[in-house]
Amino acid sequence: MKRSLLVFLALLLTACPGKKSDSDKDKGKEKDKSEKKKSDDDDDDDKGSKKKAQSTGKEMPTAPAPKKLTRDEGKKLIADAIEEFKKPTRDCNKVIHGITTAYPVVYKDGDMGAIDSLIVIARCAEMTQKWNVMRMAATEILQLDPKYSHPAMRARADVYLGNYKTALEELKQLHQKNPKDPEISFTVALAMAKNKLWPETLKIADETVKLAGESKTQEAQEWTFPGSILKYQAHLHLGELEKAEASITGIEKYAPAGMGDKFRKALIPVKSNKVFVEGMIPKEIYLGTYHLYGKSPKAGNLAELTIYNFTGKDQQFKLEIEVPGVTDKNTKSIPVLKGKSETIAITPPITTSFDIAALRAPKRAVVNVKVTDDGGKAVFEQSIDSELEPRDSLPLVWNVGDTQKLTNDFIAAWVTPNSKAVDKFLSEAKKRLKGGQSFSGPQSATIPQVKALYDELKSKGYSYVMDPALFAETSFSQRTRLPAEVLKSTNAQCIEGAILFATLLEAIGLKPVIVRIPGHAFVGWELAPADKGGDVKVTFLETTAVRDADFEQAMKIAAGEFAEQVKAKNFDRGRSFLIDVTAMRKDGITPQPFD
Image (cartoon, rainbow, N blue to C red; front, side, top):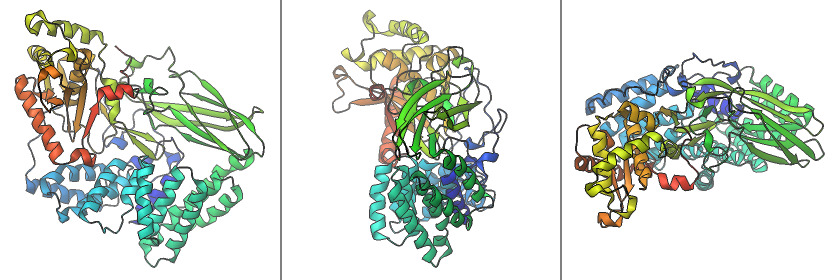
C-alpha cells in the first residue's frame, strides 16, 4: 500500500464526523478538513463534475448512449486510466470511470489479467471513500486470487459501509490465519471501533502498532500511523484523557506537520468539561428523503449524537439542533450516568416557512448543535457544514462521517401514486381498456392494464433515452424528477421513466419493482393469477422503448436485459439491484409528500 493511502486512512480516522471532507476529491491530495470552505459556487468535486445547473423541473434528457466500445478501445481506456493513477495529482473519478467502463469489454470472467486494473480501482476508491466500489473491486480480486496479499481490503470496505457483522466474520478468519499481519490487525481494530467496543479496540490497535513496528517492510511499518490514531481514539472514548494526550506524541512521529496540535486542541474542551460528544451528521441533506427521518428504520434520523459523561456524577444533558432557515429548533433531554455514554437520535422538523419545491440547486447549509449539562453550561457547541440537496436529487449513497450507506431503496420515495397528475393520466389511459373496464390491479389480468398505460404514454409522444452517466460508480446522487413533472414534460431519462411506470403501476394496485443495472434502469411488476404466467411471478418492461417499440417488444427487451444481469451474477456481486416498492412501503419508505 502506498504511503499516501496510509496517510489518508489516518486522516479519515481523525475527521470530525459530519463535516465536509476533502478526501472526497479525486486529486490524490488529502487536505485538512478545517481548511475547506465550500460556497454555493464551488465545483462539486465530490461527484467528479462541475456545480449542478439550476433545475427547472423540465430538463431535456441527455443524448443517447454512445456506441459500444471495441476491445482495443477498452484496452486504451484502461491503459490511460492506469497512467492517470500513477500521477501524484491523480483524478480518481476519471480512473474509476475509465476502468469500470472498459472492464466488461476487455476482461472475461476468470481473467487473471484483470487484477492490476482491479487493484487500481480499489486503491482509488479507498482514497476517495467510495466504499461500495472498493468492496466490489476487492471481491473480484479475491475471487481471482484467494491468496492476494491484502485480503482485508474487502472487510475494510464493509466496515465503512456499516456491514459490521459481515466484516467481523471475515476478519476473524483472516486474523486467525495471519496473526502477524498489521493491516488485518488494524482492520479488526477499526471494526471494533465502529461497533464502539473500545476496550477491544485499544487492545487490537496496540497489537497493530507493535506488529507494524517489528516488521521489516516499509509497507507493513506504515500501519503504525493509523493504528496509533485508533489507540488515541480508544483512550478518548474510555475517558482515559491523560493517556489519550500522551499517545499524541507517538502519532506525531508519523503524522503530517501540525496534526498533533489538532489532537491537543480537540482535547482541551473534553478535559475542561469532562464530557465528550461525538456526532453523526450527514454531509448532504436530501429534501426528497427528509420526510423519512424518524419514520423509517432505513433512514434513521438526521443526527445521532453520543454523549460520554466523565464528570464523576450523573448528569441530565440537553441537546439542541437546528438547520437555520430550513428547520425549527428541536430540543431533547437525556440522562447519562457517570462513566457511561448514551446515544440520542434527533430530527428537527422542516419549518413551515421553508418552501421545499422552490429549491432547485444544491445550497450550503449549516447544522447547529449544542449540548448543555444540568447546570446550563454548554459542553459542546458546533456549527457543522452540510449541503442542502433539492427534492429532485435522488441519493444513491448517504455520506455520514467517514462511513457510507447505500440508499438504492430510497428510489421508492420517488414513486408517488397519489399525485393529481397521475390521477388525470389514469383517467385517460382507462379508456384503452376493452369493454369499458376499469383498472382493477391483481383482481384481473395485469398485462392488458399495463399495456393500456404504455400505449397511452406512447400516444402522447413520450420519449425516453438511456443516460450513460446514470448511476455512475463515482456518483453519490442522481438528479431525478418526480413523475408529475415528467408527465408535464413528455421527456425523461431512463430512471425517471422507470419511476413513472412504477408510480402508475402502484396507482392501479399492482406491485412494482425497479431494476437498477449498471448505467440503466427499467421496471417490472408482480403478475396476477389471471395472467397465467406459470412459474413466472414477475415480468419486466423496458420503459425507454415507449417511443420506438410496441408493448410486447418492450417486454421482450426487458426480459433479455434481466436475464443478462442474472447470467453475469451482477445481483450477487452488488452491481445490480432489484427494488421491491411494496416491500419498501412496509419498511417505511413512503412517497414524497409533494404534488
